[in-house]
Image (cartoon, rainbow, N blue to C red; front, top):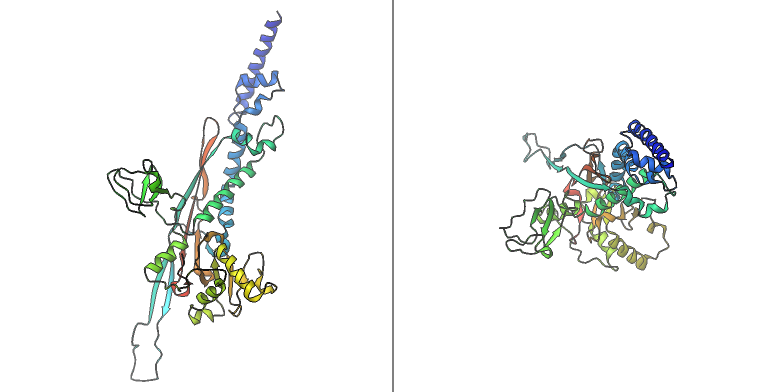
Amino acid sequence: MKSSKIFSGLAVLSFLASIMSSMVAPYISIPAMLLVASIANPVQGVVGLDPSSDVSALTNYVGKFDKKLISQMLNSLDIADDIYVMRGLKSDHHLPKFTAENGLRPLNTNVEENSGTERSYSNRTIEMKGGMKVFKIIPEDLRDSFMSEMLEPNAKEIPFSQFVWQKEFEKLASELNDNNYLSDFNADASDYSATATYSSGDFVNFNEDIYEANQATSAGESPTSASAKWDLRNATSTVTGLGTIIADEITASNITAVATGAITSSNAYDKVIEVFRSLPDAVRNSSSAELRCYVSTNTMDKYLDQIETDFGNGNIADLPENKSGWRTVRKTEGKLKIKACSWMGSSSRIIVSPYKNLRMGTNELSDTNKVGKMVQTLHGYKAITKWLWGFQIADLDVIAVNDQA
């Protein structure tokens, strides 16, 4: 008799649970008997194990703020603070250059034509390329990790949607910042062929990943069967970075690099001055040109070592002028400022150029810049974020670099 009453009570609860479940769907999906178990034994907090509410919170947040997150990501890059950013570029963008030619001569009423061309036009192009990252989110993984220490006992959902996505995009920003300088666009690499041989420096698409051969390979030596001969290059194949552009232009004899040799703690400052003085006088003496010197953190350390040795460390001119970190370089009449650039990695390159000459293009307003295609899985969901970006030097005539990569 007693057991039949219990069964009858559970049946009623089951019926009520099915009604409640249908009322809240599709926002939260709670199986009827699971809800019964939770009501019957609330101490166990069974509902707290259901990830659907966590998935809903995470997807709702990123769905609402995806453009803001991507915009913050692109603008938080150190390189976005250091060089000129062109926003709203939906496709490849030309950077035109106008050059007036020489023609000065003595007054002569018999001459009515110049002796050469009057002017010339040219342009360089920011090639906008797409990047992406796939996210796989399983709420239980978050519970079992560092977040478990921040959750209340029997918590029913993760109240850290903003925090989760902020950290995801901070990590992505770090990847972009650390990989852009020497990136070389190879997303269009040919598919790997088992019958082909490859040389060092060749790129292939192998199972939708981009690989570069680091030595010669024989037929059939794939990134799987001969992994030591291949390097994964997904992160550095999305775009052509400034370091690669500079190296290519030096090879093409469009930029003449100053032969500084190795940069050390006893010559770094001297080499910066040497590169600065290789600029055309018109650029150095321009009152409107904001000249900047871009170096890696490693080179900056050596620069400061020589500054301290040669000039002492008590002069305010050696300190950053503001939070942006730019310092005025001595013996440049206050025209040149220098900064350690995290995006240059361990490069020994010294780059001196007017501020707006180095360009970064983004398209923060485009539908391409979004977190989309959120696909619910058995335990969570997958999502993908996409964006457009590109780099270029607007005018090769007003940039000076040294011969160190």
